[in-house]
Image (cartoon, rainbow, N blue to C red; front, top):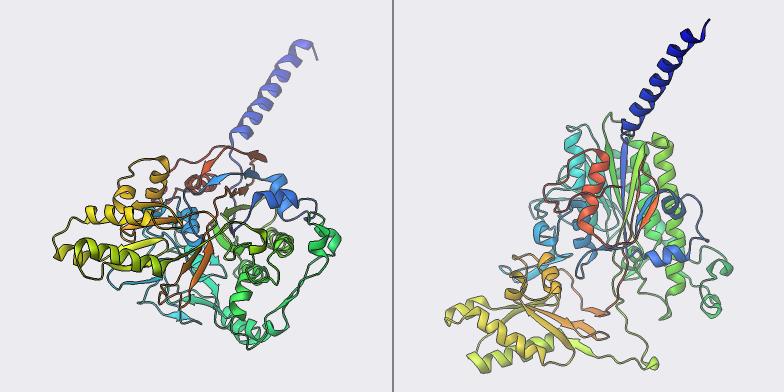
Length: 534
């Protein structure tokens, strides 16, 4: 064979090889069979980074080494876990979702109730009557279900009822949560596809029957908590949830032990419902908690908090392993999203000499009412206080033909002079987003139907004693206001996406569109931001 005859064959082979390489480069990666959304309330990236040497290989370390880490996700002004979860699953701000917090004040009934309360529904294994209908925009899970034309299977699992409903969305097969009165796994009549094993589990494996034997002690030996001072780990903690204790369910639901129950239920859904094998994209969303435990025997709760991170690392490894054992590696997309840590309900020990004070909502209401009576005449000028907001008596203002804006301005000026009050904003300022960028963020995280007339921000270090008891809370609320920048990381582990760390601040509303792009489905109808590309 002459060289002239070899050359064309060589060229043809080279062209064929280059064509194949180009085709492979242009072919998108395999679409996942299942997407797993994980919301961790209170996760702090600084603690994750601190404890990397203590974690195993399959949980946080797997996510950090193989995933895209968005280290600084911005939620705007302070939001609680319910509002933050709604933002995550919809890609929309509270001004669009209508979910501004766990509880919403209703001007008509003059009471605060659960934001997802739906009295037309019935509880399944619970008396709680909730549904996603108060959430007025779509969710990522809704889009997964729609993209699968009803074949896709979608579930939301959380200890908290409202989180479970938000994670499940409007179109899901089922939302499951833990009944805070007896530990049963519960749902709503809104969802018509509650797995049969849930009822069997409540009867034969009821948490109510097991809780007496459950205890929370350090997971590892003191040496594993080397990031803590020796005096902190010198006396190991031990918490039990004894039958008959009035607050045992509250304490259990606040502890990291509840994360193991959530993991177990999520794993059973994956295996028994054969998620990832429907022929379409399936989805399961799970919520965990890492909020500081407020029932510690000592004021210093760092020992318990570090232990909670170590335990959650095990839970994450278990969940990831269960999913990948079911569908195979490379066929699942995981995204882990944190919600900002909440402030502690306890103030620092007075022995440390840190200045503090108490802001009584009832006292502030009485003083403001006396001032408005002196200014405009007798009457009950304030309907209520809820979540930092005063609601004025609009009927009284209207009956006296007063300008509501003028009344609000005078009331704000009076409250600003009160001890412990840092700033007061009127609803007019917030709704019109007048003034600073901070006011614009307040507008983003407020909804006109639930916004009060006056928003009061208490001075840092002051303890807010909310002694205006709402029917839903049935107890006084105490919390200490702190000003601190808390990182809220998001980690995305997806087939074909290279690992990296992105430190620049990212609007939380971009997370859902980004995940939707990776899944090749459309974003929810309320998503306000374009997807990230990486």
